[in-house]
Image (tube, rainbow, N blue to C red; front, side, top):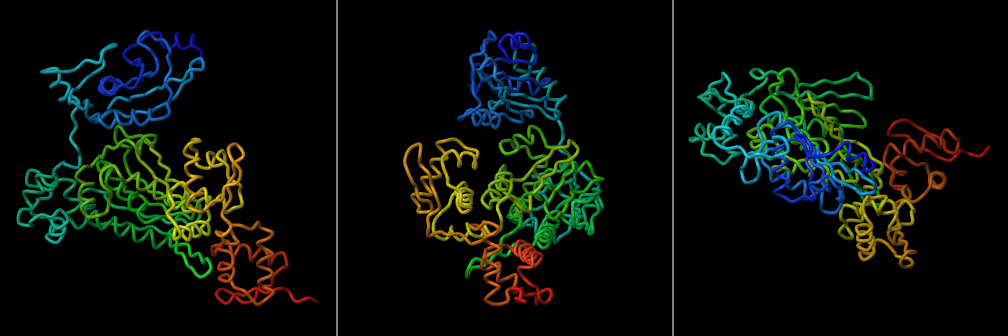
Length: 525
């Protein structure tokens, strides 16, 4: 956008437009809260009060500073950050949505609302009227028709133990923490203290669907009912059983690699059952198991101010009492850490990151079962970790080195999507630890894998060399799929595909079936 065009589109501040030179904490809080409590708006950071573009880049610590301001605000509206270039100068656009439920407050407790170009504080009767209009009751705290005395004694005992209560005082504690009200169990209480909450709350259970391919037809459907902790445990066990593990043999070592780390599945399930809208009682939490993906779908959109874009920075649990109890049972991470654990664990395991989708009426998280990093490469990294500590980015850089690539600062920036300084830090750390060898200096510096760290053949050899290795191995004696895996580091599926290709090319002959299958070189005529 050119400056003249910007001036035409944004001639001055208004009900929906605010100019800011920088990201000062208090001034930013005032406008964000005011927009959240009114009709929403956009803050243009890097624009003076008179509308002149002075510039502000969305880099360095600026995004973190803005996210921290949002965390300091009590219940802000949803927001997103964007960058716009005006005549070669970059400015930051903070788009703030109106809160649909409840209201926002500054960290000091002050409530403001946008009136024209001013962020007005509310006091006295005006504040009371505003709060009365905006306040919303959490559905999980709604009393049901189930008497608190009808709670299962066994479940109440387990619940008291999880919280560290004296069971004799459980009735009072249930009321204090929102699991009972007016002598009856609340929605949250029913989820934990009745044997089948779905009899009272509708489809408050987990539905598991298994698909053999990417079609719309499933071959298995299971309804997982019972108290909420039982649902999560049963679903977690069933998913892990269905997924199984990748068995990789590297020399004398065997590695059982989870296709999706159990802690990631646990957090996806915990988020789904804890943050779902229980008002939508005709829809269960749904798990879709496919060969390529585990997808967990939760009824209801993301709670304000959380969006797919800021899901890691923002936190707004819809059902505070539900998630608090789930943590007490050891089935969820501490507040605000669930998404971090999911994304960081997938990164550490060199798996593709979780993908989140908000469709207003439901939220889905997709966990990829496979990634661009092969199981054999993941196993090799596990083996390297026995020789020294590796940090998150180190693993992926070493995988590229194992594939025979010559590493440079530019190449590592491309691999990790990072800046020059961080790329240099990773390369020097791996060099100093003995994983990489440096060649040259300054602009001509390159790095290669240290010679003593040779990866398995499946990583370092090209397709033709790998095929020749297997044919030579079969010339000595009949070989099995397990022999190929041990010699190359390939997984079972990769080894089977390679053997089948060699049979099709008449370079190997197959004997036997299933576990008795062996392969040998063709006998010359």
